[in-house]
Length: 68
View 1 (cartoon, rainbow, N blue to C red):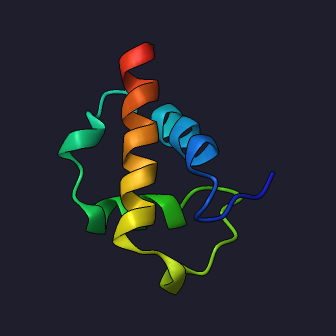
View 2: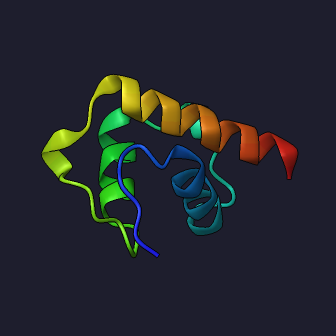
């Protein structure tokens, strides 16, 4: 499966699986950007991210983190 910047929910699930003990709200956007681009199947252009997209991913990840 491939994902891009707008696949916040899929990225959130993958991040939760890779970093299960990390509170998403403590992750800096620079680290979040790197972690997203390092995900297997990530096919987005690293330069195409924005603060808005990273925030959407972080919030989706936070929701997954809270519901586990």
